[in-house]
Length: 212
Image 1 (cartoon, rainbow, N blue to C red):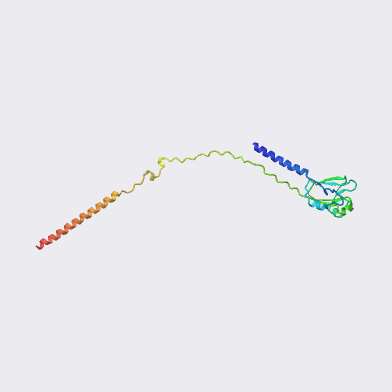
Image 2 (cartoon, helix red, strand yellow):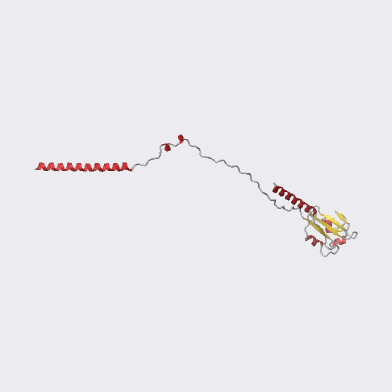
């Protein structure tokens, strides 16, 4: 619980810090050290190109009050240096302008001659893209595993055994019966041979006696 609360607080702090940084923005001094001058050391178009502007950033124009002004104008009035129909005029000397949207902004000098000499600039404000926040640490909570019931083998009743089990183990045929039958056969053969020989001898003797 403590780690989860800490992670939640850290996430909220990061979000608030990001939103606070976006709401404040950055402050840019137009023209650098020269300020909003007629003959700056760096062209305003070049100064604008090497910077990146976002919503809520601030442009600061430094000039002498009453001698010049800053006009926010349309695109057509920018290229024609038309100072008669400005969208907004900044005339207080140290003027600030905050970007409230993305897209192009057109600034010219309130003096048309200075505008024609290059005292003007275009600022393109980038679209709002929130920065990705770092991932918050996450510790998954795994539920405790419940013990699984052990399965016991099913009980087998004595009457449920197969006929082969009740008949008992099969007995191998005895070799004594085979040897007995072989001995009987040999004995019968020898007796037959003796009887045959005796009969043959009797016939021979009988014939011999008849001849004598």
